[in-house]
Image (cartoon, rainbow, N blue to C red; front, side):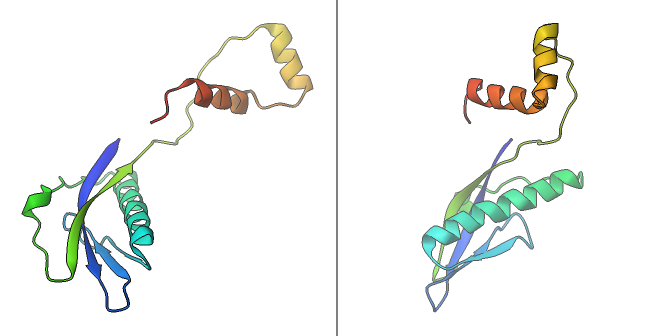
Length: 125
């Protein structure tokens, strides 16, 4: 799932940034430079949403960026987080017996091979 939230970047006296999310009270981060702050905002948002999903809590609706009020020394930017469910699932697959024997003899992980092959075949998002 993709989540996009308005993010307030407050420029500090030492040119670092304090990062807050108006729709996610308590979700706060910092960045030493603008590039670092953008990266930290994405990381904070991702971790916050993953926590809410893990705890089965409601995910707040994102505000419209134009409705966000800021103070002097602040600016608003959108931050995007993509949340993927990384839990393992069991699937039954069929392969020829000779392949299964070679996989076992080679001490390879059929799950790892399948995951690697699928990563190469699926469209990247």
